Image (tube, rainbow, N blue to C red):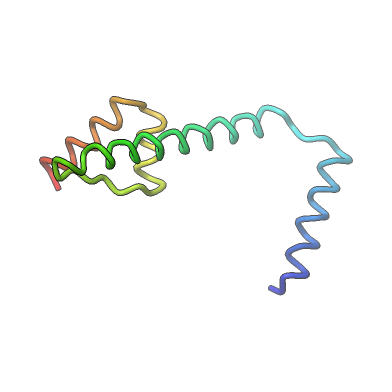
Length: 87
């Protein structure tokens, strides 16, 4: 697909959403989930920064960021335990 077609589709979708109005709840939910995933990635970054001294490294990807973002500190601890003892 050429870039011109992609830009035209995205522009049309934006104009349609501006004209019709957006449903607030789904967009708010998607924003909250995205924010939690970013916070989870930040948790994992700090875990890798401080855990590197002890040989602990948990990869930062969508799955681990989602787990640590949704579950919080217990999720990060669970990922660290899985990384140390299981993998």
